[in-house]
Image 1 (cartoon, rainbow, N blue to C red):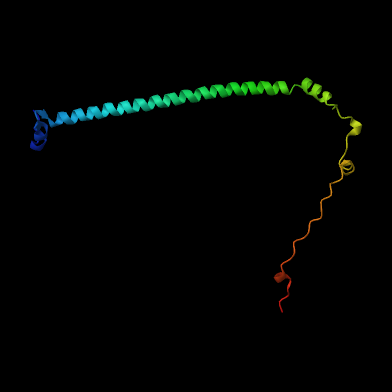
Image 2 (tube, helix red, strand yellow):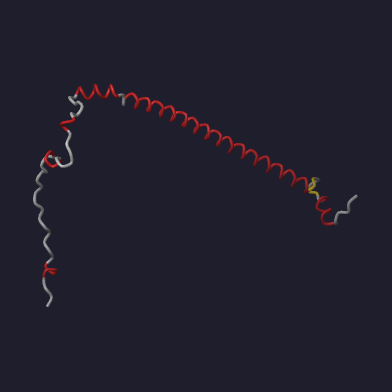
Length: 131
């Protein structure tokens, strides 16, 4: 048998109402471990639920993106755009009607006249000349 120092041996032999102190500490440690495992398991379940919710949102957003891309493709069909432009009287631009940079001022509408703005009056102190 291994020789154990007297104070340590007394700790293992110390009893409270017939139960050794070491056993009480051991049970307390086991209870603390069980409680911490329960807390960790509950936190993991919450995280798992959050992850599945986020994954579901991602799937829904991907489906929305696919639908929107299909809608854009349908709206950008050249035949559809051509039919719409003809309905409102638009047509292809004739080559002879194209304007160069030099002719732009002639084509542009005249600017609307703005009412003349009055300049703010200068302060009297700034207008005086110091002698």
